[in-house]
Length: 237
Image 1 (cartoon, rainbow, N blue to C red):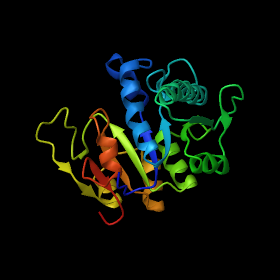
Image 2 (image 1 turned 90 degrees about the horizontal axis):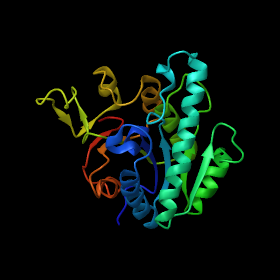
Image 3 (image 1 turned 60 degrees about the vertical axis):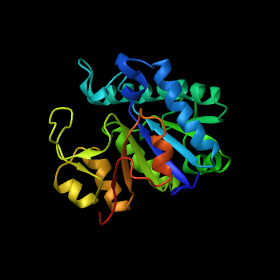
């Protein structure tokens, strides 16, 4: 591998781990994704992962509970995903560590940038759970924040589609795809790349974002090698 990046932050949705089931953790899908990540990690790429919790619960849309309580439940869902996905990584011969922004002593170590950097330097794959540790912030925002804190070179956001479009390609067959676009243009076009808080932070910190299709074998490796696999958002476009 001839990598364009040495340290990456991979953002996975919880729904991605659910596969076609829509709920829970699908073994076949999780095994495939873990295999791709393991290959990258064994190639010497320092890898941190933020996983959403939407395959179990979306806090902001939970009926009958407050936003704060719902978001806390959602953060715990991300911890469930990280604990589970760590098992798939370890089955692929990769040492994985779960660090959580919310305290769960028997399930994960407490996240600190110092500890995260230590484990990354040791070649361990990090699973960063618990979002930011605060309600009202999405796991997109957690990914952007953690990327800056650990000095990752890029956010790789895995999605169901192969890049960024000017409209939903699942609904509009004539949607136009961007190979490259600036943070400012993506924001002005109101493209749904990340939530506004996360995206604004990435623009301020000049963090490049690559949007790529997750379940296409070899895509993660190709992204890291600098191939045009999905769409890239960077300062200046």
